[in-house]
Length: 85
Image (tube, rainbow, N blue to C red; front, side):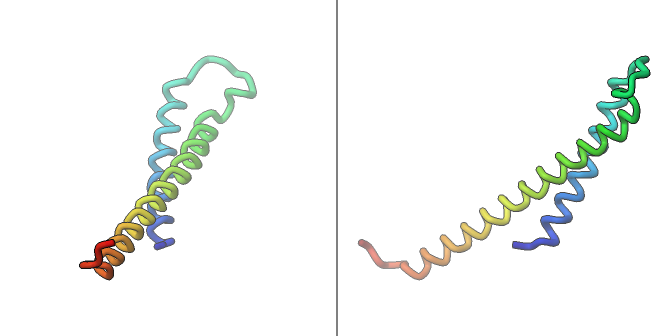
């Protein structure tokens, strides 16, 4: 598997996840001053980035494994071409 491509994909989806997290935090702004609501933008950005990185790495890994499996299947079929059992 191409670890550089997986890393790039996870980084890109982490950025997208962080932007979505910031958007959600902005939409959820309220007047409460509790400690729970402090640094809400940072918390949501970190959660979004973490989830985005995990989803991106998983998606790219599955994509590469599928391509590898298809390549192996095509190779096996070409080796056994003409054999009927």
